[in-house]
Amino acid sequence: MNPQSENREPRPDTPTARAGHVTLLGAGPGDAELLTLRGAALLAKADVVFTVREPGPELAKHRAGLLRHCRPGVTVVDPAECGEDVDTVVLAYARDGNRVVRMYSGDPLLGCRGAHLADACRAAGVEFEIVPGLSSISAVPAYAGVPLLPPGIGELRVVNARDPEPDWDRLAEGDATLAVMFPDLAGEGDPRHGFDRVCKSLIAGGRPDDTPVAVTRMGSTTEQTTVVSTLARLTADLKAADAKGNNVTTPALLIVGEGVREQPRLSWFETRPLFGWRVLVPRTKEQAASLSEQLRGYGAVPEEVPTISVEPPRTPQQMERAVRGLVTGRYQWVAFTSVNAVKAIRERFEEYGLDARAFAGVKVAAVGEQTAAALREFGIQPDLTPPVERQSGAGLVEVWPPYDAELDPIERVLLPRADIATETLAAGLADLGWEVDDVTAYRTVRAAPPPAPIREAIKGGGFDAVLFTSSSTVRNLVGIAGKPHNTTVIAVIGPETAKTAEEFGLRVDVVAPKTSVSALAAALSEYGAAQRAAAIEAGKPVLRPSQKRRGRRRKTL
Image (cartoon, rainbow, N blue to C red; front, side, top):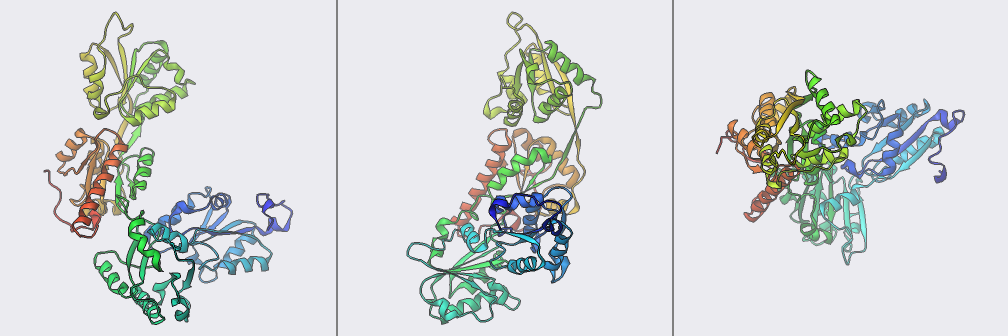
């Protein structure tokens, strides 16, 4: 194919246009973020997408992560539904004039049958493109911390264990690194048998029995597990890993060679402080986005479960008067205590064709890092915020200046807030001499209960941690789903939220050092790191909270 023509759309009257187009897309080893930019661009143009054959819920997430690049209305086909003749179905869609993307795990031409589809496309006169992807051969060892060509080793040999007669004597020669694909498929039903056969064959071929080896399963996903051993001890160490719950199953990659010795030092993915932790984030999807992204950076698997729904006030007259008052100079101050309050005012401004310039001459106060960030995004720099360690209405009152009739031309403060917000700030400002217009900017109502599997996971210990970002999230989560199990780590954003959690009989494990969701996620990360370090120091396996023995429900300390 001519690379200079790859972005040109064919004319509607050409045979190519009638025949459609097929992309053979390398989808990577398991982490959807490893998709290439070219792959994402072609998914965005696709009419039909054939997904990857991927077993289990973790790799199903890989599939969902890839499909988010597609446009609405795309036809998604599971290859498992096409039987053995997937290529024929792909070509049928292409002949109907569709742009078809056929995904392959890793790379289409390495350990996959992409060449067969390419041949079929050429024979049928269908234009095709092969988009390479990161193969498990290179990506999985990188995620495991195993260099394939460490100093002194100049050769890498890739072995397909599906081959019924590998030349083990030749493969065992020298000190080349061996990357063995599909070793478990030779195990006659038990993955360990396949590994055992490979190890014994290499030892019989002349490799020393103390040659280091590593088995990594579910590479580049948060279910990744690496077992480091030797050719002689691998089978026993796999059994020990099974006993600890680290079952080695498909897909798995076996690395044999000196680079494995570097794994304890270079391991970076599995040693993240919250690696594999399933963390419940009880916020609206919009609010949870940045928090979930931060948790992923710590290795966690965030699951967003809305506990509240934000709705407009029942009567809009109060907000209409408040906006008019801002424009006409009725207020000296506006105090925002939440992102939702900023959003409510901003939306009302936009309805009237106004922008941040309407705040000229008005002083603005904000509680919380996210609230201040939302104001800056609107074009407003807060004039007053509480101390970092006191991000609350009470903390704002502590730094708020008293009303002075000689210095302050206007004595009124606008306080847009939720219908269920506490009176602390309004009462404190009144005590300082200010006249407060306490306006309902939005209502918070309890969200619908989550699906039954989520409720069962919450009550049964399926989550490793729950983050509570307000007292209302505690009340609402317990109300719609029940109390988290006693093995689940409870992390809260501040003292008030901790108090509410304890009132519901929950033991609080983590309290953020300051009132911000970013600080809350960081505090949970530090807790996870401390638990991991303690287990390693005690010579115990590193287990997630959900892997520990279940006990009674939580009781307040």
